[in-house]
Amino acid sequence: MKTYDVVVIGGGAAGLSGALTLGRARRSVLVVDSGRPRNAPAEGVHVYLGREGTPPAELLAAGREEVAAYGVRVENAAVTGAERLGDGRLRLTLDDGTAVEAARLLVATGLIDELPPLPGLAELWGKDVLHCPYCHGWEVRDQAVGVLGTGPLAVHQALLWRQWSDDVTLFLHTMEKPSGEQREQLDARGVAVVEGEVTELVLKDGRLHGVRTADGREHARQALALGTRLTARVGPLARLGLETAEMEMGGHVVGTHIPADPTGRTSVPGVWAAGNVTSLFEQVIGSAAAGVKAGAAINADLIEEETRAAVTALRATQAEVTPEELWDGRYSERERLWTGEPNVVLVRELSDLPPGRALDLGSGEGGDAVWLAKRGWRVTAADVSGVALRRAAELAERMGVADRIGWQQHDLGRSFPEGTYDLVTACYLHSPHDLPREKILRAAAAAVAPGGVLLVAGHAAGPPWEQNPHPDVHLPTPREVRESLDLTEGEWEVLKEAEFERPQTAPDGTPTLRKDNVLMLRRL
Image 1 (cartoon, rainbow, N blue to C red):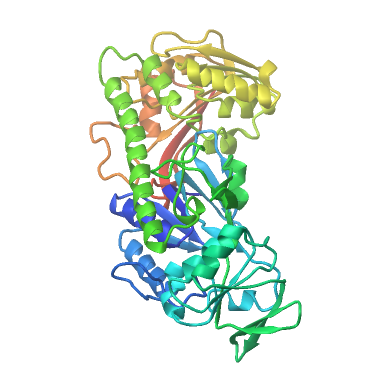
Image 2 (image 1 turned 180 degrees about the vertical axis):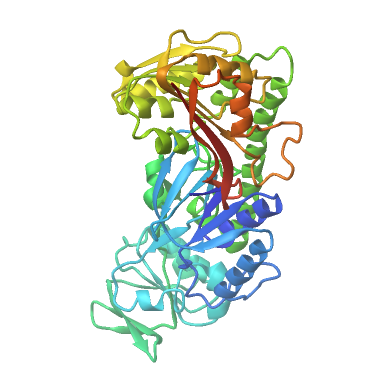
C-alpha cells in the first residue's frame, strides 16, 4: 500500500497546478489521471497568458514534466473506489486493482458535457460545434454561426456570439419562443431566428456544412454554438460523502458542481476541489489558479496537523506530562493510530500454540488481543492509554470476542496485572517517554506460568527513511533482552532469538523493509 501526503484526482490544469504547488512544498504527491481531458478536441487553449493557442495535449505534457521535476508521480489510471480509514486517511482503489492512501485529496475531475441526441453533433464537438465564445469565438469570427436553442439562456448566447460575427442565427429547436423584449433585442442586433426543431447537422468533408430543420430546409452554417448541461465528475468519490449541488445562471439550472469555499475546501474532511468541477464556467487559466490556491490550502492544513503532533511530542519531553497523557494525546490525534490487525510476528510465532490464559502488554487499540481471543485465548490486555483501551473494547465488541478479553489500564512501570499466564506478549514496547523497559520485561517473565511462553518483539533499528534516527536511543538485541531478564539458569528454554525484516511503507509512499527482532522463551 503506497501512502502519500496528497493524491490529486484529475491531471488537467487545476490538478497539475495543485500538484506543482504541493511538490514545491516538498509534499509526497500522486496525480491520478485517466488521460481523457474535456478540452481534448480543441485545437488550442486560449486566454491563457504566455500559452495562447497551445494545443491542450502539449500544455498537459509540459505540466506533467514540470511536476515530475519536483518528485510528483503521475499515474495513468481511473479511480474506481474510495473509502475513509479509521485513522482518518483516505484510500482509493484504481482501475488496475491497486490501491493508494492519502492524508488529503484534491479533486480536479472536471465536468461532463451532456450533448443533445442530435446526429452529427458529437463528432464535431470542440471543432465546429462550440460552447464558449471566449475559447473559440476568435477562430470562427465573421463566419456563419448558428446557436442551438436548448434552454432559456439561448437568447443570451446568441447575443454574446454576435460580438464575433454579424451572421448569427438562433435555431429555437426545443426552447420556448423568445418573449417580446427578447425578440426585440435579437432583431436590434440582427440575429435571425428560425423556428422548428433541428433534426441533424449536415457535414461535408468532415466539417459542418449546415443545419437541417424538421421542415426539411437546410440552413448553411460554418459553426454551431450551444450551451450543454454541465455535470460534475464525482463517481466513486460520492462514497466519501462528497455531494454535488445544482448551479444556476440567470435563475436557470445549468448543471451540477461540488460546493467548496474560496480555497477549495469541501464539506468532506480532508477533501478539496478545484477547477471546473467546482466552478462550471472557469477558463483554463482560472482553473490553474484555483489549483494553486487549493494546493497551498492543503499544505497549510497538513502543517497545522503536523504542528499539533509536534506539540504533543514536545510535551512528552516535559516532566509534567505523564505516560497516560502522552499516549492519550497521540491516540486522540487520529480516529485510529494503528491498522487494527495483529502484529506479523505474533501471527507467525503463535498460530500453532494451544490457547490458554494470555497477557498482552501494551495492547494499544486491541489488534493482538482480538486475534488471540478469536483463536480461543482468554486475554488480559493492559495499556496506559484510556483512549486506546476504549477503542480496543469497541473493536472486540464488533468482532464478537468482548467476553474473552479483560481490559486493564496500567502504567506498567508503576503497576502490573496480577496473576500468572500461559502466554505473555510484549510487542514493540517502545515509548518516547522514559520507559523502564527492563523492569517491565522482568515482571512479564515473572508472570509466565510453568510451561508458558514469553514473546518479546521490538525494533532492531530505526526507520530506514531516517538518517541516523535517535542516536541516543539504544535498541537492544534479543540476546541483550534475554540477559537483562536475569533468568534462573535451567528454568527457561529459548524457542527463538532472531532478527527479521517486515514490509513497511515510508512516508513518501515508497515500499521498504523494517528490521525487527524477536525473543521467545518457554518456562520449564
